[in-house]
Amino acid sequence: MITLLGGVVVTAVIVSGAATAEATSLSTRDRADAAAGWLARQMTAGERFENNFGFILPNQDLTVHAVFAFTAARTADAYSRRAMAWLARPDILTGYTGDGAFTSFATTNAKLALLVQVRGGDPTSFGGVDLISRLRDLQQPSGRFSDRTGFGDFSGPNTQSFALLALDRTAEGAPAAAADFLIAARCADGGYPLVFGQPTCTSAVEPTALATQALIAVGRHADAAVSLQYLLSAQHADGAFGDFSGVPNATGTAEAAQALRAAGRFVAASKAQSFLAGLQEGCSSDPARRGAVPNTAGFYDPTATTLRSTAIATLGLSGSHYSHLTTRGSTSGAPTLKCPKKK
Image 1 (cartoon, rainbow, N blue to C red):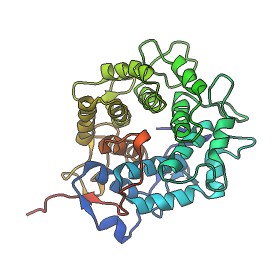
Image 2: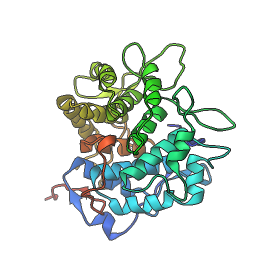
Image 3: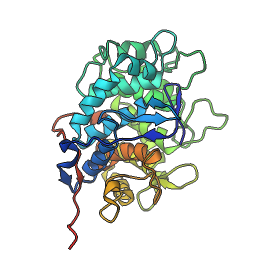
């Protein structure tokens, strides 16, 4: 899978577990804990993810999603703290969010601002940067949050949703115009597209799920309910959600599970959660794989897609969603899945 991360195209990922007592001393039967523990053990130096193009580049976005996952599972907090310190380094921060002058990426500023808030930090002073001011500065008169770059604007519905979620946690709150712009981009069937301005608006599960969470967070419940109906109609009988090909996958299912839970649709959310648990590598798998959540059944790829799908799936397995994430009750270790001893 190829992903644009703050203007950097990312493919393969370098992983290296932290061979420390905190990585191996705990065991759990909790699915979210096991997923978070597996993900933590894949980090380089127990603090970050990296990409290998024949040379090494930092993967800040995967690191950010990993910290969201650890926080949702309320485990691997030592890894979260190290990752946040790494993300605050000037070179790492600028490479992710832009320099704030010539380049500034709306998605990454919004996502990182939300993560800092979730972690109990101050997003107006993270690594010496005011992420909130930068984000508000990227809002256009239309209400859209757009990138400032010399090579295009890559913002979309997910950008708008992360911005609403982050700004909703500030004293000033999220601008009504920003919610209005997101709502206006909705497709006729109630879902949201991957990008703005499609010739034919085509709904996708992940941006719809994120938009539903954001609209609930800012109090636009009637509009969120429209998108919720799209999600419910897209759910498979086994609880899964798929991509455009209809193939059930972990990322779409996990994002939808969060939105369903945020909307109080607990039965549908639990079905999605059960599907994720069925994808997870369990006690019959090689011990090094236990806890990971492949994006599609049987496709375990520990250097690329399985890292991201496990990070996203952890939130779905935890029963949490972005609006309610908190560090309260977090523990430091990276637990392994508890399995019966072989006789």
